[in-house]
Image (cartoon, rainbow, N blue to C red; front, side, top):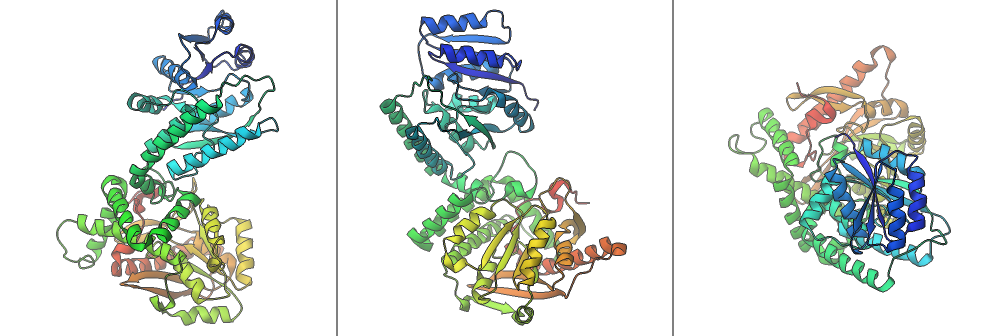
Length: 564
């Protein structure tokens, strides 16, 4: 979509503020709509005067005051009628920095499907009561979305994609006063619209005019949050599917765009629900969410069916009868994913005992650690992702560092830091391993710590370093990163696999290399050989436990890499 942007300014008795704002906007050359929300004759006269001789400026008059939300919607509808695709909302009270408008415009041009929301940087002028009130609303919004993606829900400096806003306004009766700003953001989030936050300076002028009515507007906002919380409850499967399981976004893309988006709040919410209501209740809720995810996330379902077809083509007996529909095994694949999440919560709740763990070749790890050195372990998205908690229980005194490609290490670490039982586990977020990360990991290995990296995900990068090797009957992209890192760490390398077998977990360690050396003359060839060995071992484990490989995206074609 090509961006066509205008500016919408709601005005009610802001004559001086509107005059100053128009003077600043005149330098930008962006078409602007001032919505006179039933102002008195003095302010109306100023607005009409401003429009004279300014072809870029239009004034729309509402006959009576309807509130900020009503004025903004009037302006947004007028903008859409004039062929604009986006509208930048800015208040007329002088709080917002007009110099930041080009930054909003540029960001909107790069993210035309998103809402660009101002994230205020307040100075000392903000009243303490307003700051506390804003934070209370933010907390409610985070609850209503089960997400921290909306950084600030009250800032009136933002860019709207008009089609999405008006589609909501045509279907739902929105708040018309100060409750409009947070409500429209929550409903846009429910609609699946992406959010981008832009830090911007906010100043409260000493002579500023505020129309916030303490009792009336707080009552409206409270009523709005009651409606939105109720809306969140019946949308709970949708929100958990999107936020926790990587639900259906509106754009296809890299696997990272499909992963956990809920952050600390969702993880804490899940753990609290499990601890308060127990396994039976949580399992029932999870079944509902998984069923919703299976029915409505067509992309994940197609990926599951494609993977299972490849499994059946390589080993006809891996999924039971060699003929018939794969929909039932695919649903079982999703259910297995849900069980893995339940196992994750069991691990956090310290409910997986050592008797539940079966180790294969643990002596290989013990021998390495006894030497005083650490090791690199290459794992995958096969089986229980909480294997590192299980390892931390067994290998007391040895810290485990897990590299993750997504930006959720901070949320996981915050959650785990509240639990002394997870003291030996550390998540490190990185898109690709650069020099600083390599130095840090080398220090950890030299100190006798373990480093874990996944070998079945392409890095989050515009030009990822990949190796295409056969996997389940067709070439698939695997990352070079684990083997480059192994050469930099100069330590032993093992493969790590963990699968659920009934009520127990089998954790297997497979020696991979005493040390990886990548000579310049055959660097690519050496990495390809290692990627092929990893893919062969991953395939063997997938054929034994086909419903426990949890990559619900087009693995063979990820990131634009075509399966040929």
